Image 1 (cartoon, rainbow, N blue to C red):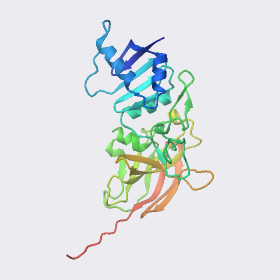
Image 2: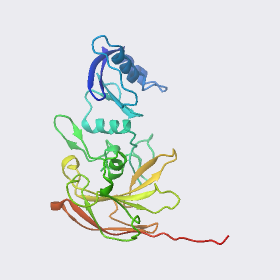
Image 3: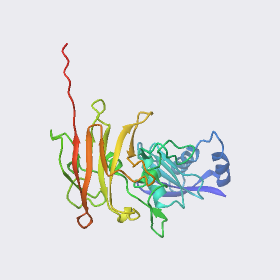
Image 4: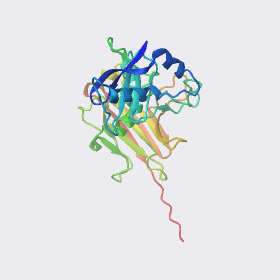
Length: 292
């Protein structure tokens, strides 16, 4: 059976037939030294050289390739490769990689999703970039979808207005009570993300606080919840989000934090107004002057 592909850039283009069969693709992809971009590149070439509906991908434009039948599933470096039967959650996750988002983690030193995964990887069930270990909603027609992205990933995509982000200490106030709007209800008043920097040596190393409600794409959440993440640099030089969890059998997300000079506690939430309140989100810096 020939392997046919469609290409999702700005328009949806295809189907195009590439010079590989589905069986050839499966054999190639089963190899230890497999080239997972081979069939993606064949699709781009087939589109460009098509005699019926030629299409040249504009330089720098992210592209998703969809294959029928499905043979592989991945995303990264401006690309995503998807089977035709993929559900919305997996599609969103891999396209997220194509848009340069990383996997999300937890800080649980005892969690490992698979033998090839890093410690804590895929352990933020409230974030799409931990798919498929997430609270996903059954859409019926298109399989499981959601949840939404966590606040750090939404921010990284540039989808949060700076007016909806509070950076503690930026106004020289080291402590305050904050009203948070649910990240999935931006129509509510309040901040959508609080950043709490605490590492003078790295301004990109900070805590984030967000509020999520169990509706819309987050409808599978067990309850409304405030989430605290630590954003820190990995060994590869990139930054990752780590959901902070209790060290208990329940492994629930922390609802308070008192470490590194930072004190965060959740005081209340109001589902009817899509808001939550946190108090004493504080950051304290010590400045030491040394005579030369």
